[in-house]
Image (cartoon, rainbow, N blue to C red; front, side, top):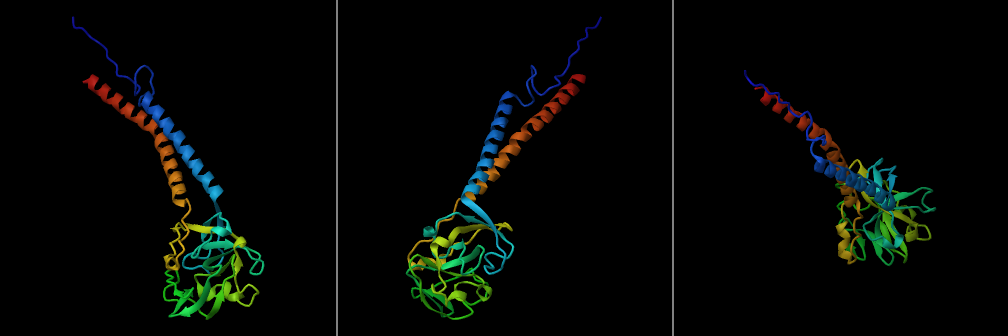
Length: 257
């Protein structure tokens, strides 16, 4: 008589009822999901503390910021503002709403336009690559203005259509705005996703350094990295299960032969 034996292939990806992919794999995937959630939520929480979103309603800052763009403004004190910064401020003499302009001169500076077609600050011509291509530094002559201490002189990047300091030169403050009126410094355009504003390097020649960018890139990295960890950790279980099922089928086919 022949001897027969019945062999069965395991129906699960592991042994002794262990989950597909192994216990260690599931522990690691769980840790990845937990860490990913932590990074993801921490990134959004940090952004909520550091930044405030604004929608820019006009094109006075084109092409740097177009009408309808969504921007993130870092919450800063007015004393932290430097030349070249694009700021959000509110001045009752200008409007009853937040406005967005670029700081071109600070307290103690002497600003005028134009010399050789360029804006001058403290007698030095300023290179302004953020202006629309082919546009002059100003459509009208700016008389020499000495900015009082604690105040700022602001211009739009679209000089031809911006109601900025040049429209308030006859005011008592010669078109300047108090530093205390500033509520934020724009760091990035997030819709459309243009990213960080370009550095206003033309002001470096004046001796004072430029403002450092805020933590926008780090926050974005945390959010993207966290989301990637959550997706990878969540996908491990189904992938391991499919791989285990495929191994089981191969084992069954080998036994059948």
